[in-house]
Length: 317
Ligand code: SAM
Ligand code: SF4
Image (cartoon, rainbow, N blue to C red; front, side):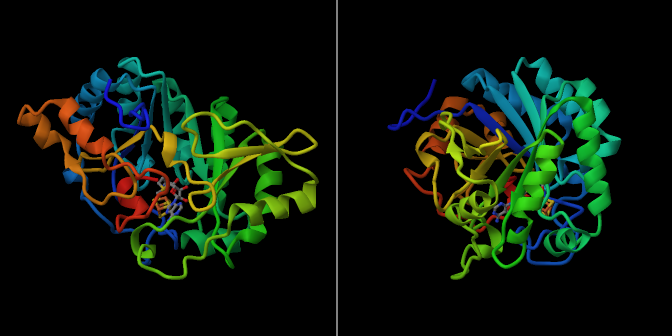
């Protein structure tokens, strides 16, 4: 298997199925619109995705595929794709979603073989939810979370923090998640898309998050970090756990095993790179997968993520 000087390879694949979304989160995109990206007819078909994933799996022995976006629940063939990827014997298939239409889909996604779901939730009041997402679908998202929990699938909540906007939601998000048996995680804001060239990115940092949690719940015990994990985790004295994905404060490039595909099938070895390798075209030309992957591996940063002008909506967070 290919690897670089740090011993890194690719074992986790994240696919951005479409660069469109029914939300317009303020840190993800700078405009109030849902009309981003590809038309439905321009989307890669499930058969094309399967051919790509199959090619990558035979070169890499993938352990996990995450389907994301944009909003993956808007991709018409999501259920089929989950089933077909599971049929390739990839141990874990998961989605990252804003949860707003999840309640209608989660049962059949589970039946298709979905293993876990990450749901983004940046606020626990209608007002805070709307400030972050530019949408009023708060109740729908909570319904999506309840539906996911009731299937028995592994559910995690991801809350992206923007200084001055939603750090007051840290404690409510923790209490809500724990009351439902969900593992919550907070994300430090990353310099993606329109934030890339901004001097003042309003990051609410890991230490500040920990400080707030400790003030409320007392001393926290750090958990041992698992290899290739993006998040660090802590446990409260009462035995509740939470994570922080801290690109700024605790970078995790050193043992990153993630490989990404955007919605056109362009391959990226790193979030910090805005140049992808057009995989469908390269496969058609008969270029060896190993050769393409070696180039993608060179895109990885040694230590620290630098950001990119691609939006998370395009490359898939
Ligand atoms: N639409 C789905 C959702 O929101 O979960 C999937 C795609 S979204 C790009 C995936 C994750 O990326 C979300 O949790 C979102 O909060 C996060 N995200 C988007 N832009 C970000 C940024 N600039 N910094 C940190 N996280 C970001
Ligand atoms: Fe859509 Fe997710 Fe971006 Fe929000 S973070 S606008 S839900 S892609």
